[in-house]
Image (cartoon, rainbow, N blue to C red; front, top):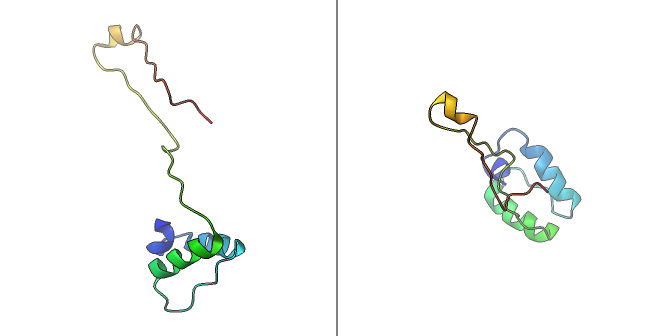
Length: 79
């Protein structure tokens, strides 16, 4: 979405994807923000938030104790 709003690299592909779902192509000079709002409605799609692609954890403390520390995170199973 931000890619289209800000006209960043890859915005043309994202716009083509929305058009393939039924959105009208963006007219020359049309504000990308306005077009995106119309395109999402026309394509009958919605934004889905996700938690990100990567998760990292680092242990802290003295090196000799780090190997004894167990790190467990529940509720973040990969899908």
